[in-house]
Picture (tube, helix red, strand yellow):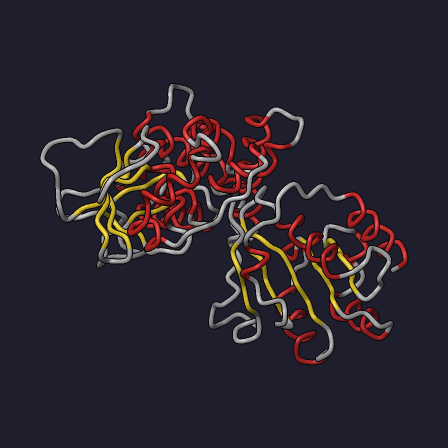
Length: 392
């Protein structure tokens, strides 16, 4: 255990935290079992270390970060380790890469039931089903989702300024004043294209080729988050990769399940399952009509964020695809987004109709809001598209 304490100390003392994530203030840290889910590359490990850095000194042995990638946990059970840790005065155990341990959910449930003075905070893939009624953790764990950087967070990193996050209702009612306040400090449109290309994933800050890193991350999502966690044979990986590529070249696109089943040589039912797996891994978004949901066919398929469009397409990325993908990605964090009705593209929270574009095409629809690219400020129901990147 002493070696693990030394690793913990090193990580806390050397972690580079250029930005404090908003999720840090949304989590109720008083809960005894907390799960932080998220796709690869969004900063789950950094969030665990950030908690340790804020709440304890690096030498304080009441808190310990462990990674279940460590070969030590091939012979040491989580519950035995947790028991030893709390017997030595440990209070908070931070566990990374939980899915690398086969019976992690049952053992965390055991720790929750038997070690009432021990708090466990763990991080894992977005694919994990923590609240499933059949999960040993049902009713015990409180889970949160960590996303990639919002446009607001990206701007803070690029400019050094601090900006408030707003609710959707705030933006709809007060967008002119909010946009004016932000624009008095920075020119947001000067940064939007960079955000589309590389701003969602925190590893853009590393001194490496971002596109290559993102491709590696996407392949790891497929191989581990989709195949391994869902216990799918590795031989099916080429079909999943081909499906993702086909979707990326057309996104946003209506879904022809029959044609996709022909293209990747599998059944219609399997295609539907694959779509769900890709969505759970945060590689795609499925846009449904308000009255529909999985396992029905979605109305449209989008890639999960604009960065993925650049990583997968070998041709120029369409500006309208970027706009719609950006809007869907940013708005869907805390709001229900469905396919639009009444000649609109999106329906949000069942009551707000949105059209997305670089200008208003055709007759103005008084029942809709317009998220318009290329403008710094709007008027009435015309709102700058970039401002929807300030929802978190």
